[in-house]
Image 1 (cartoon, rainbow, N blue to C red):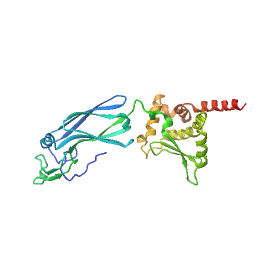
Image 2: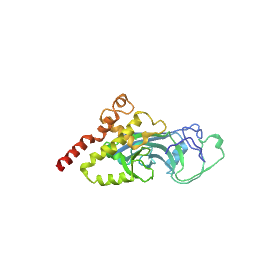
Image 3: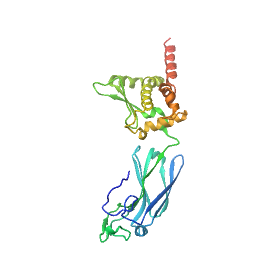
Image 4: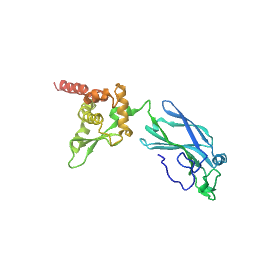
Length: 288
């Protein structure tokens, strides 16, 4: 939930308007993390006596809104106390998490008038509905990384699907979403499904299908063909970036540019070429 400068039907105490020319609202968060949970200590302060009285009367409260675009997680944590703590399950968020701090109305407020309003509002009263924003602080964000994240496993960021288009190519790659979609022609996909039932041939399928797709993605990243698309928000980009760091490689750095993409892809997948050759040798031995 990104907050931009906007007009409200009532005065709002904010960092970008003069609705409350001599008052302010500030909110701070201190975070810590366990293996499964993010822990937050919140503290909110407002110099508006009028809004402070509404909170004391139980007509308004402090609130933090969390939103994660990757997982579609949304939640509001709130309290009447200016200092409070709350927990966020690590499994619910991944990547960039946007945070907005508010003071919101708990109930409808008739004839909302405060002495701290800008003089232009003198003589006007406003109708406030439950949930309306009375004050807001600057938005912020944090980056959620799981210590135990199944999506660090490179194969999990790929999805192999059939391409039903009459003019479908043998293989195509789509990297516009959270997963890298590998599209196979209908005949190829049907054969892939049959072969995939044989676990000993899985490395061979990775070499034939996943490795070429991954090389294509790495070449795209190496050639910086991402100027018009923000891939950093994509789950596959985050996973590849984290996995590369395990090998001492960082996207955009000299060590990434100097190493061949086929070599990097083999490292990321776990050397499926060697496993494939071993599987073929085993088949040869069985045939003899």
